[in-house]
Image 1 (spheres, protein in one colour):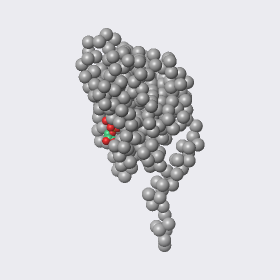
Image 2: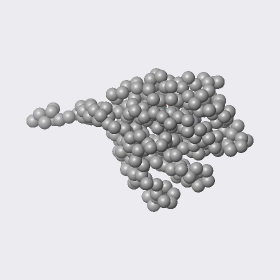
Image 3: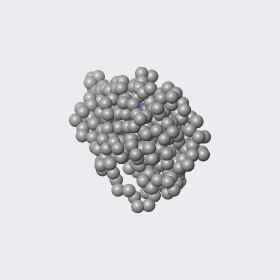
Length: 310
Ligand code: ADP
Ligand code: MG
């Protein structure tokens, strides 16, 4: 019989799913936090999708009508590039805000392609900040003070997303002290959970000593390859270890996502109909609904522990 001929192929199923996602996203009502939320996008591992997630979630939130500020705190300046933002040496930047006491508003540039996103770029100057910070008074609080002052004057802002460098040094510490919550991108690969317990205990320590508001609110599985069993296994493991933290939306590995930055764009603007763009818009929608109706904070610690038994 011709059953095989008429059955849907994976490609046609994907196309149909993308159409449903587009319709859903165009009609969706995004959530808006009651107060501006500062979200650190952090993981001390490099190459797990921090920057990609930061810029694409920023774009997705802005498309949903939120007012977003992105602070690039990685001297590589990849988030600045991906958002089409000038970040040559000497440009007013995160370095000036942290080290030079520049008001955050003075370093912000509007993102040329996305209404509702402003960016504080990172320049190469920031690579010296780790050493310069050591001798400064209040060295852990410099970014937090700048962000607090900015938000007190700019009530229109809904979300501040801060792209972190792949380390747990003084710049990341400044970000964590400035943040309300942490979003951890996790690459769905074999060593995905390695290093997470160190990140977890660092965040616990910062919460105890420097910033009682800080908590891990969200995990995002990135670069998933649906054709392999490994991606699924990592996803299952993350959901089992950290119940409720990972967004339902999983970001697939996609060439479009990795191409976009070379055009100074997010995938959301570069190829809005692609599977990767739709995934990031869905992740942004989910995140926005969590921001609007946050879970009650567990009384002690973050309420979630890394289990050592398996
Ligand atoms: P990090 O900021 O954690 O170092 P990046 O966001 O820069 O990680 O991502 C690392 C590399 O992986 C980059 O080259 C990026 O373009 C690529 N990448 C990220 N997410 C995806 C994806 N979903 N599909 C394909 N490539 C991706
Ligand atoms: Mg990065």
